[in-house]
Length: 384
Image (cartoon, rainbow, N blue to C red; front, side, top):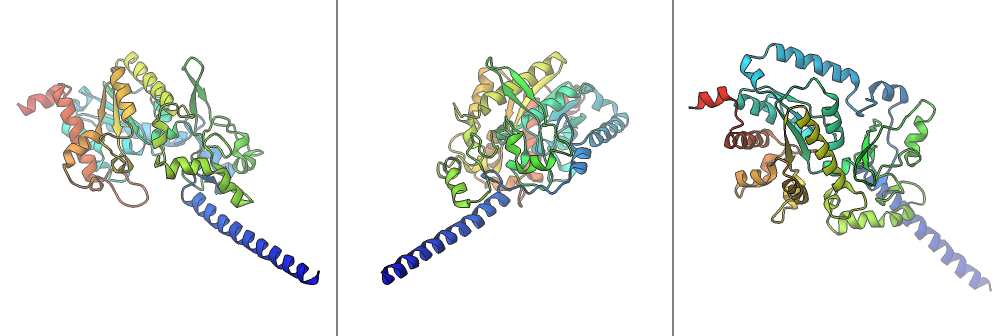
């Protein structure tokens, strides 16, 4: 009996040690994933206090702050006052995210400024890093003073997952609390606006720890339909609960946003994106503008290219609905020939277009304009 007791006690200790080792390994692994990627496991890493958040957040758009928008309008008004006459004859505006904004290069190297010099026209760039298609549309909708003749809606292929998200920290970890609005589709397929959650000094800390209690329309909320999980003990169980998300994202190869273009995806991200684009086009035409969807590819799009880009469903839908668009990805491939696509992108954590990528994008848009006689008359006259 004594020997049996010693044996079973020893076995129990071994099992406990193995379980503890597995749990410790699971803790470090999930913590690493949460800190680096954020999308699979949610680790509350927000250190911004409520007072700072409340002063910074834009209650309508999420970001930038109202003060930043006011400063931008003042700067734009001054630049317009100093602009030569030809630039006022053919104004262009652009809405979108960091690719639209030309993030990562000097202002004069951004595609919109390069294109503006080629056209001899003013291009007001309203792109904001981190924006989804929803925020870009809302910014356009709210910017009634915009009197552009041509208006771009910049769509980065990755935007499709941002449109079903309300706390950007689920997608990219950040010490700031980055809340945003979104749209959902009603039973008739019409857009319904979901505002930013109302946070107060009393519920702010609870929101950071338990966002699932406040975000009822965020596809990536921990424990929600995406399969993303809150990073919590037991960590091995957290990994097991996240297996579907992990399988879809890494095993099937639908990295990041790629799966959201698939028909029937539970997020309804693709029909939502199309509904937002339709609303943008409709309002632009009502305002007497000429709207064009400008599609930006990521480096991952080039890496996953198999005869067509992952956003091919978007191209087909735009064609079917006779919505004018410029597919920069396809035209950039032609410009590259057989050269490596990374010649277009910056290095580092975020791969945006470098100076070469911006120049080529501007040239593609210019050639598109010229082929359709969109080029301003003073520029056409100067080329004869």
